[in-house]
Image (cartoon, rainbow, N blue to C red; front, side, top):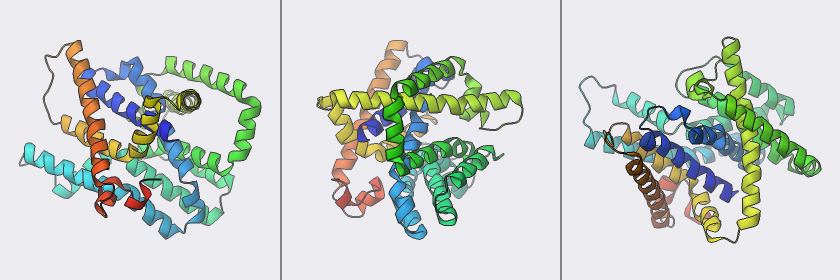
Length: 340
């Protein structure tokens, strides 16, 4: 699981490097590599989050579960967002007509770290269902339908609608792991082949309006319904294919140094990597850079920036991991848990 998380956070950084450095925020929707990454990386991340949240959802009380999850996710997110805003204020002074500071901070935290908010809100939804329905599969399914069809298009609600089904899938797999494992063992070749064909067809049909950032997960007419359906089906099929590919890679190469580095160093550092890379790329929105760069220069800049993000994140984790309170504030993990 740590190896999978490590690969996915690398793909998050690569996706942003494609957008900000290689394409400089113009035309990146049409990049085949960008499309492939964005078909599955966040949905699969959310499915893993649901899978790993199973115990907290089933065992802990509502207040304890929500409190622990807020401490794990929101506290470090607020720290890094505050640091981001401080840097922006110091480097880029605000204009006279700029929005209120509090409103700006809320919008910045939601826009920069939407996945953290989505994971937290999905956890709240799932935990609320556990209290009222004792984990009825039908109640979980109905909640998915209601969330997906909710006509909400402001702020990060479209992204929550996109992520929630995958969160519930991950939790359902964890809850019925033995049954799903038995099904996979019996029908693995057929399921993987079917998912591969579906993922390939969805990749070929994927267009700009298929991205959730553009269709807002909103069904208004037949074309929008097709785009939303293609988005969910393509993401699900690609996620199945990639989890199988990553599982094979781990089984074959778990003794390889690079593979073990990803699992041992990057996998446990996904949150701080996500928070730091989010701050870096949000800062780049306010900067003018690379207007005259050629393809070679852009590729070199992307490789350098990606390497620096990983190096800084690992250095931060290594520096504060054993410092009480500071590790909780910056990493979201108490010192005693970092070695596990």
